[in-house]
Image (cartoon, rainbow, N blue to C red; front, side, top):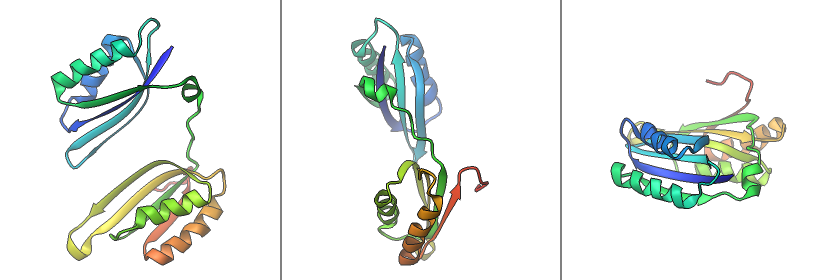
Length: 177
């Protein structure tokens, strides 16, 4: 079996997911993993697809070129190695939320502290709300802390104090939304 990682982006509009799914259906490619989002009028998605027996990257690239031409999307593809295909996705065990006045360095300080503790970020989403002095920065991270949630809380409390932002760490099973 051949697996590929697709990175797709373009101007957001209704029907992008349908268009990509249709192209994969015509190739008999199975969409196994995906992540999609829209930011400020731009859409991006990453897919891991499994190509059918006897089909390879040549057929995939031809279908993607046609899809790009027809839709105006930008698509990159790359084959996955056997090791990458067999690698299990880390399942997050906690959620970190950051909330406070917008300023430079928030993402760096939080991600640096997590990296120093050996914590893997599985997913991150950020957003700035408000205008002028009222700009508020919000970040939500799903992380794999290998059960050391209290250690993560303590480490991020230092970051919270240093940056003047609120940082909360919740076990994934807790209601946080």
